[in-house]
Image 1: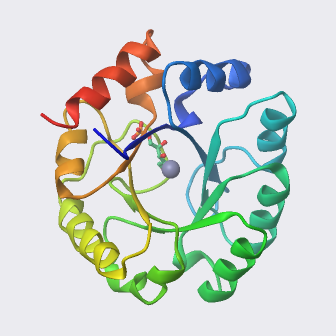
Image 2 (image 1 turned 180 degrees about the vertical axis):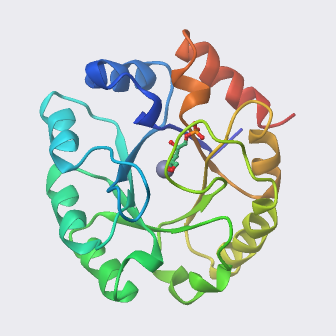
Image 3 (image 1 turned 30 degrees about the vertical axis):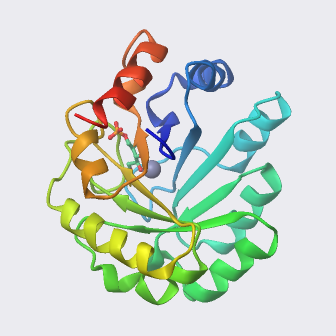
Length: 221
Ligand code: DX5
Ligand code: ZN
């Protein structure tokens, strides 16, 4: 299995021991760390901000930090996350006033950028920007909470975005987020996803290495 990434979402981690949890999943074979940022406004839940991202970096966490902003407005906090050590920042197109400017602002610092699409949103929302992106984040649940059930209807959109990415000829990752576990990861991979967020499916188990190994093994079955 080449060029796929498993990205544990810290949303289901033990926040009282966040640094240890992040290092544990990295040691267990995680490729990226998915960092869910919610503002109790764009989505009905509240998580963590750039200070926590900076604390992880200051404590020596070296992994790739994949920041998923579920907040509005986007620009000021995106800038703070860049300064805090994010490697990639995704945002929802409906959360910002000028999508092109937000993309340009994030990229100008050398940080990678992604656009996120909700299960009921049309792929035409992201199509005009595809060639500027490093990642498309397809939500397979409605954003706000971990532990929700995978919505299989999003697989049609995953296939459409896969075609858009292939036609662009650019290196753009296709990430799927929500309800990913050993039963659903294979369908997402078959539809064209290459980067898999998993929160509860990893952090609610006791042996992260075994779970991540099983998720990778489930890609091809
Ligand atoms: C949902 C978040 C997801 C979520 C995934 O709003 O964007 O990243 O934490 O959690 P699971 O894998 O438990 O569905
Ligand atoms: Zn997420």
